[in-house]
Length: 623
Ligand code: ZN
Image (cartoon, rainbow, N blue to C red; front, side):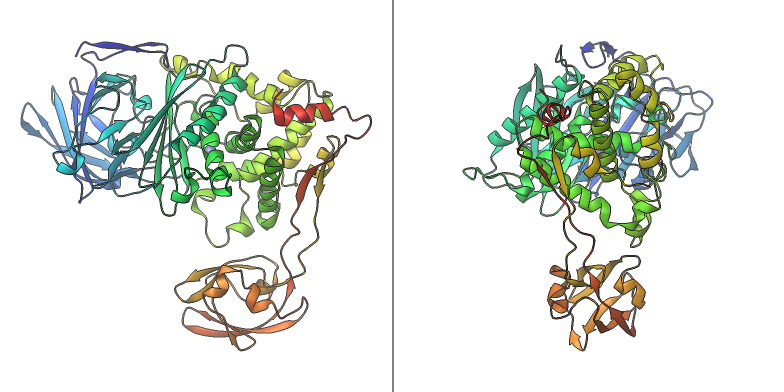
């Protein structure tokens, strides 16, 4: 194939030369959830070509060993069988041959998440990390993919949504697509099915909004009107003068289910999963909490187009897809993104200031609930993401802190500190734009020659100082590398924003989170130092009775408040519970309900002499 195409995204020509690796993928068995993949290597390594599948997908920091879903794999050259030797859990080596080499395999795709691959009669979705073997030594060659329609009546009307550039395909059609290299190939997920589709323009860039799944009376016009405002606000945030987006088109692909939530960022698209009821209904104009949350998810993943897909920690500038890639900076890449996701909603005018502060108060309350925040810093939480944040268990609230939620409070604390110390002249916005200019703007252009750079582990405070003149080392020692809470009430005081600590809930509590388990009420987490823990109860114990009265699954719904509503703080109750099949009988002294919930409000008038108040208005209004 000699046809060439140009993408503005890479700023350079991607040419499907004779060195291109050519994949074909077809949904072979919808009910059996199998993709058939063929990989043609024109000039394999004559010493024996090695191929492998990634162990993890960038953006989701856990080793998932995608190669376990390869069902059968074989190799041939000019129609003759070539032996394949398995080297380890995700690699194979073909016997030496002069080429061309063809490798064929099936991939089992039954993971309905944004991280892997899924296929049935209703649709197909895949990330390249689940289906495309990398060809060692040829990762920088162009990669061509022929996405084929299944030979199944169910797929007759299917279309294809992906931000992969088309080589020989119509937009939304089956056919061949091309990626500049392997890294680009696996950064463009593909959705196929009878999806709903709407297109809008944001600062000159075409954006597709794709929705898969049944959503009666979905108000697509409202979704794209809101998402367009968010996209334009973010493009203008990073490039205030040129308003130039870093991609030449963008695709939001949304899978709608009964119960599910999540998103994964890519350089020119995002894969989202949400509840049916998160999406707005025609002729119901009110803003529900669920829809606000969905817009926050869109805003979050879109912000990653800059922060983590182009501004990256140095550890991610060249991924090692075979194993964990450690960085202590995810609080910048996920935490700052979490800070800006809601802030961008209010700056875009999609939500108002009061709604923003409600969301912020919720984040503060989530962070202060767990005692894990006193033991693990967000820097440590970032480093251990692979084994702790992504592999949470019943003890996680007592042991770890979220680099998302606490990271977003660190971002807010830094923003307020910078604004206060520069009398409102500088802010965290300047830091983000400085990182964008230094690392992000030409990341993929540089990556074509292997010269891309990321933020080094100890570089952040010097970037802040250069951008704003403010030294934040002590702040970071305490709140990012240390475990101290971010003193929001103190920091916000300069800005005439009140953080009301609230009064502790006087309701009697066992200090547990309970969940429904069939007809039972089961302890999901026993909070450290609280009544249940002190009485000897623990996570996974099934509550049977309190003072001789039965506890059932219905009590899980309102966190035991009906079962405990007749008791006062300080009273002792007898609790019967099953641990496995053994009955326990313990005395528990009831305590007050968990930590006091804060609320955040803006004072009607600024304090006299408050230099920071105008800056605060810029914080939320971006003016
Ligand atoms: Zn994120």
